[in-house]
Image 1 (tube, one colour):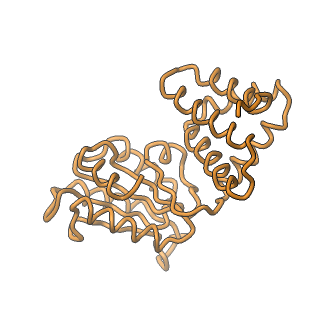
Image 2 (spheres, one colour; image 1 turned 90 degrees about the horizontal axis):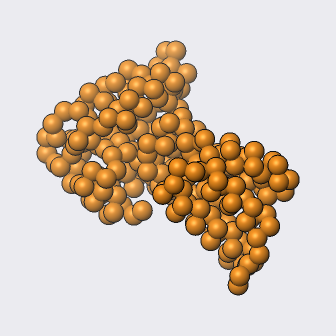
Length: 237
């Protein structure tokens, strides 16, 4: 999703919260500011918060007090633009109470408010991730990515019984779509250097599973078929 389509989604209220993540925080911050510009949100109506560096007993976290003040401000009527924007820097450092307070706002956002969380490693509550459109800004594997990819490799190498057990586990994961996106991203990055047909077949299988997951409640069955296809399927190419 590019910044112009993100801005249009804001105007249409299709999406009210985003996670921008990548190793270069300057790039993701600049993208957040560009988003505001494209969406017609003024600097006056933009609120920024971050870790309480140097504050006594802060632990370098983003505290609940800062989050509550941010929420209060974005719930006000826009002064000079089309909406209000909150930018949360180093969002991975949200304290637990602060994260839970933010979650309530993500569940019931103000009509004119948008929230962008800047994350370096996606170390956010799964419930927060599931309520945001995730926008990736580089191809660096994060700690969260590596955990997903390691888990996926074990599924491929494991026996049939384990694959079914993993399918059940993944079907109950609210971060399932992001897991599949992480795997897709990794496979696509490998293609230029190692364009094996198997990788193309797996990518097609995952894309088909993602489409089917949107139209069915039988997530476990879709994942079982996906894992079986990846492990035992043959390329039609």
